[in-house]
Image (cartoon, rainbow, N blue to C red; front, top):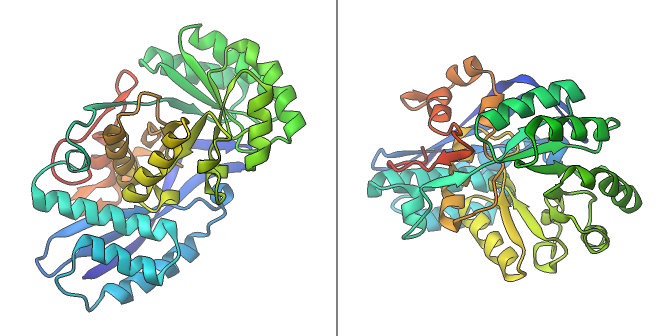
Amino acid sequence: MDLRIEEVALRLAQPMRAAWGEMTERRLLLVALEDDDGLVGYGEASPLEPYDGVPLSDVRDALEICRDALRDTRGITGAEALELTRSVADSPHALAAIDLALWDRASRREGRSVASMLTEDPFRWVPVNATIGGLEPEEAAELARECADAGFETVKLKVGLPDDEARVGAVREAIGPDVALRLDANGAWSVNEAIAAIATLSPYGVELVEEPVHGIERIRTVRDRLPVRVAMDETADVPGAIASGAADAVVLKIGRSGGIGGLLARATLARSTRADVILASAWDGPLAVAGAVHAAAALRLRDASGLATLTMFEPAALDAVGVGDQSLGDLAARLTARDGTISVPRTPGLV
């Protein structure tokens, strides 16, 4: 197998502000995996160091180790290729890129969609939320109004910043009472700060708070002391966290799960604790978003997933990057949310 690696930089249409910092550009690693038959599958590694602590250089190093391990292999199955790379590189993001490429290639070989290979009866559309960063209250309200007018039934707002109440209040007023409002603090608070902040913000009608604090027991404490649903996101990577039952919901991402297979295994574990499952993108590129859309369809998720993020990139940045005979812009266009849902790709390949 031949594994090719390309680093790309995608500029955001406007800066994304969250508790962990501000981002203006997203750097990704695209991979192309080709076997003896000449069929190519495409994947993506999308670590985000300010968010998950994983440097892009570390993932690239892991992918280069995987490339060396795969170079002289002939006639191995996708499962064997993934197991081989897992044995030489301990990097979920690198494994996710290879896993996505293997699914992309297998889907093209079989001539059917990834979702239909995962389950007999996947959803045809996946409900998704709009995501709004830590903008000034007036800007956040204007964007939230546009999202509600576009048909989104759930809006997620970044909090854990100095002007939270003004921003939350402005967004709630803009979207009206019928659109669900979800907050994401990215672990910015201590337990006492979280309890106080959520008590202040919950009268605005909060559906869910993602990662109010970091840590299993801290999340459990906040969940047990407040009536608002609490989800773990970053904490889901802590050993034992998903099985702990400490949260009402678990947010899962393709990259941190090691690909589609790892994500489905994590989702099954979360559901065994009666937690809801939500999938999300860490401003991933179209290939990782597509993988998550297929997984959400196979899991038949009804909670809105945070996958409507591709419009946050400058269109020219996506159009400038080629994937086979297409561009990332072509792929992103097929994953655009309409009326609060993304249509699950039904053709062979990830998207």
